[in-house]
Image (cartoon, rainbow, N blue to C red; front, side, top):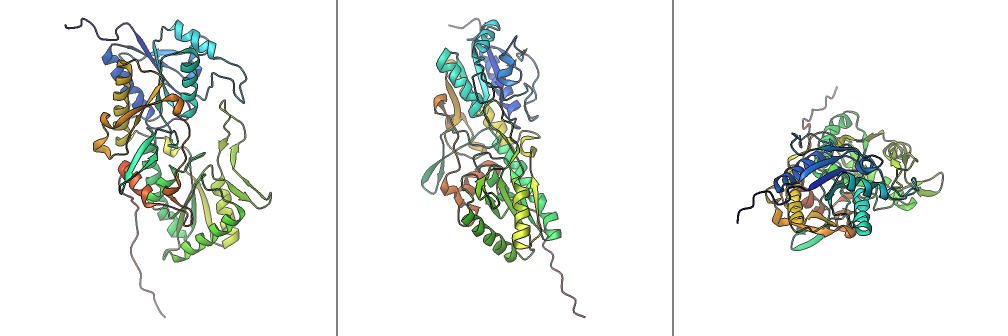
Length: 410
């Protein structure tokens, strides 16, 4: 019997995005909005993450509005607002969230975010029974998605989140560009890449020609620091152009000789509402110490917000659409408290709904880079990592100046 109206006509789905932006959030919003509208939902956008459900609320109607999903960042804006008590904010504001969900007659809430934003959504679901669906998002690519990477007959657990592919392309291109200035001055360049607790994004610099890398998962002790300097000199001298690019995660744990302790470098010690300080500056410290220790000119370069910025790349566009297809499945079955994820790492042409899964939001959390993806002794990423990333952003690339000049002898 033909239905006279759409399945969810008369119901409202709201979308919010929280935490750091990525180039794939607008693509995620557009894909979720389009599919929810197709099912009959009225679709609202909540501005500035959880902050838009505090006080009187800050909500817009997305139902029949054109939406540019290729433009990076988030049109719904973002914040690091935590509705529950934390280190910075001691107030429990979850009652305000509940009141506004009722005031705006929101039937389902989709939260686009990482461990913090979706962790708060998980609490709202577990404590108050609010129908929520989490949607993964992170540049660092460290939100546990229980995705499997199949390589040479073995499978390894990895992570794949919207935003990572676009950020990886930006780091790949930036690193490739840096070779021209680095070679001109025969320098060592220390390129700082986002990554508070995990080195997934840092590894993408090797696809632009970085020869060494430091990641948060491997602590740089006093002994390891000396070994690192030896390797730096060895690789620099072995390069005919006397040029070396070292990628380092912003969250690298680095030994401080003056304090005789291992520390992280902060751009600001002020905490956000989830208790996180702002990192930045470790690349300059490492470059300065290379200069003093080895007598080789070195420079620090912070990639900063470059991987967060710009358009959404093709892999992320397809990934957000595919995960939004899984959201439809969850909505149809009213299966809340879940997050859609890719079950397997596959190349672009195979990013389809049959490769997806949905995991309990109670199972999300941070997932660092596994040991098998990084060679601790060479300070390089392994062939397993190369295969993993090739599926997502293609082959490594770098520009090269290959001319050799004959030496003039007087």
